[in-house]
Image 1: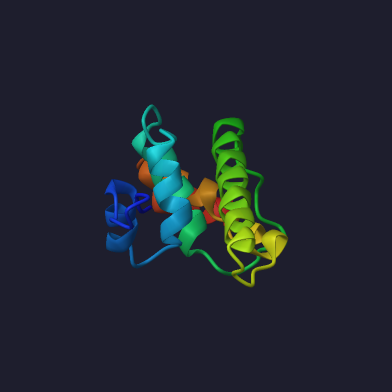
Image 2 (image 1 turned 135 degrees about the vertical axis):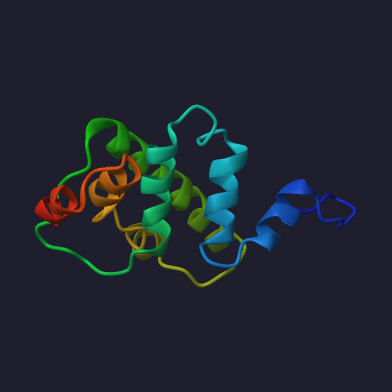
Length: 124
C-alpha cells in the first residue's frame, strides 16, 4: 500500500477511499481481479458479506458460483489477517475470516436478478 520510499501507491489510495467495509480485504479482491469476470448479481451478492453482521442458523448455502466467490473472499481475508498479525496488529485470524457472513448471498442474488418480492421472501 506504500512504496519503499513511504509513498502511498494506487492500492493505498483505493483502500483510503473505502469507508463502509473492510478496506484492505476489499482492495485485495479488486486488485487480484476477483471482480473482473463475474456477473453484477454475483458481485452484489459477494459484497453483501461485507455488510451483513448477523448469523442466520438456517440460511441457504450459496449456489456453487457464489460459494466459490465466498471461498475467494475467505482466502483473501485470511491472507490480510495474517499480514496484519505479522505487522504486530492484534487480530484473531479465524474470527476475522468468519466476520464475513455468507448468510444473505442467495437473497441478494435473487434480488439483483430481479426476482419478485414473494420469491425473495420464500428464500428468507
